[in-house]
Amino acid sequence: PYYQGLNEKGNDAKVHDVNVPLTREDTHQSALSNLNQMEETVAKPLARQINGYAEEASVIFTQEAGKPVDLNQYFLSRGYAVVYAAGIGTRHSDGMQDTGSPEQVESMKNVVEWLAGNRVAFTDRTSNIAIVANWSNHNIAMTGRSYLGTLATAVATTGVSGLKTVISEAAISNWYQYYRDNGLVVAPGGFPGEDMDVLAELVYSRIKDPADWLKTKKQWDDFQANTEKFTDRVNGNYDYYWDTRNYLNQVKNIKVDMIMVHGLNDWNVKPRQVYQLWSALRDLPNVKKIYLHQGQHIYINNNRSLDFSDQMNLWLTEKLLDKDVKANEILPTVTWQDNTTEDAWHVLDEWGSSKKGKYYIGNNVLTTNQNSGELNFKDWLPENQFAYYCEHFDKWRDDTITGKLPTNQIFKSEIYTSERTVDGEILLNLRVKSSQNIGLISAMVVDYGKDTYLKETPTNQGVVIDRGVNFSPTDLMSFESEKSAYKMITIGHINLKNRTSPRQNDDLWPNQYVDLHFELQPTYYKMRPGHQLGLIIYATDFEMTIRGNQSIAYTIDLSKSSLDVPFTCKK
Image (cartoon, rainbow, N blue to C red; front, top):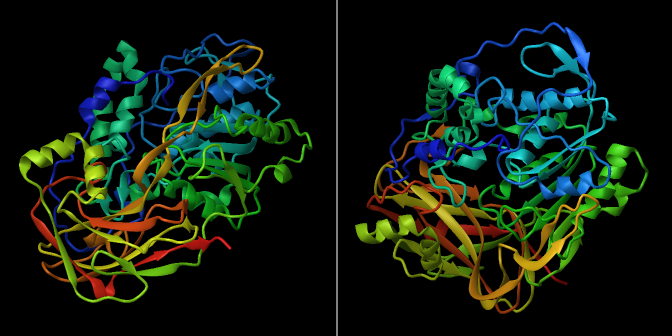
């Protein structure tokens, strides 16, 4: 969707204000039926009569945004064909841009069907001259990072014929988990105020053609108004709109072998997106592999310490060229980048432990003994300080972790004497009350200890790699270390009204204790001797949640609050 050009001005104008108050909602449960379905705004096209056939295209796809994907250039140099498809609602296409919708998935599925010889394609919109992909062997892989990997995953859930494998990197499997979390409106890290309509505005490249834009402007404005209505930034509940954009519902239809790649420090497309897909695939007969790196929202094919491109060459040689090169056996099930050592990768059998050790929450400590008493914090800052942190949420996060703010409570474990690893989802059990009839809780888990930590952004090594005969160069990158006193491991959020489920609004009264049980983002993280595990409980997350700066006081009941951590200890 990015390759036909971006509407950055429209995107910026569409970003929602996040400095809005949390509001009370009536008790109800959201419907998953089609009662809330978005109205059909475009008639489905009629079948076209074929007037002839051509072997060469008369219209060429022109790339306008960004560079070609490096991994694709690597494969072009090795005899593969690479196809970029922009999809419905993009320049030179018909239809409206509807983020993650069944229609968008269908448009990408249609491209696969054409490449597999199962669907007619035409050289242009009007001549009805059909063209066959006579250079295709009908074996197709879908690859890509972020939106590209998301659509690859979505198409795999259709069970389309001809698709042989998917290599999805930093991909979304459930759009609700991207822009919402447990009844809260949240943002992908670094993009406060973004939402489904904002992303659609960015990639609605039909605006690049003046005649097309003038003809469709009112239709587009009406469509966007519908999108904003159905995403409902006031409620935040999981409903029919989000259910149709949750590809996990159709995982059982995936017939192809899957490779998933994700950064454990990706707070844009957060790790839960791949963890839930990985878990859903666990009992299916498909071959599945996963790569977990220490980066943010990045590609890893040009990383110095992992021959990822060559591994994918092995994989596609078997999946697309039908060569028995033992790719299923050679590639590990789980490849994990060590978070404590540069250039170190390990092979794991699985990701996600069901065994959890319990910490009880005490007075600024995490202990193995149950505690009693109450602790309080208030979710409010003076206006000048609030305004500063709205603009500098990285500084807010640092000040929160280091205990410089009164808007949270910090709890730390004992200092570890041996190595242990967090493997999967940490569960927070919290009894809490709000001074008002509204409330939200956020939580961070932190590794405290003066040490060296891998940077989340790899460093350019000053070396350019030649990717093949076409000389498509790329920079060689590597994760380097830096000294710090702490490292954020994971994060999570919940609306107090959604303590039963993301679909359901429960009533909430001022100073009424309620019980919360919610998982933080999954991880695989090694804790070193001499370090402490820290838990921070707070409300407003300046980077990810709405920011009402309401004077709400929260009280934690220590006797009913605990943290379940999936620890595996080194023998």
